[in-house]
Image (cartoon, rainbow, N blue to C red):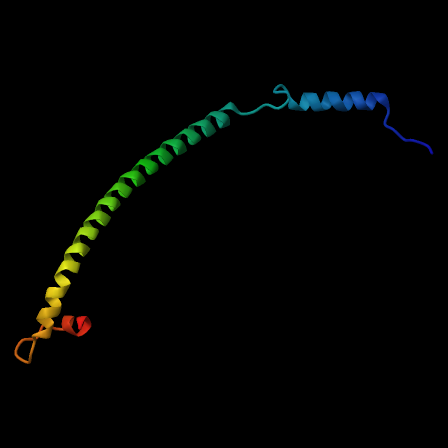
Length: 104
């Protein structure tokens, strides 16, 4: 069977073209574009850090609110038996609204 291969000089020229295409001499880049992208990345990093610190501060405030809500719920749980007693003693002269309808 006959083998077909490219000529030897074509292989060398292909390698040279590949090496030249990777060099900065033939591929001129616009340095202003490069520096602009570096500045944009820096600004995005600063924005990301500020958003992260802001969300951490919001999370600490939410933690305080949850703690306060837990204390309030404990107080409501302590007052619930008193409210049930009040609702048991209501009559046509003393009504406490819809609260007693839901508790009893």
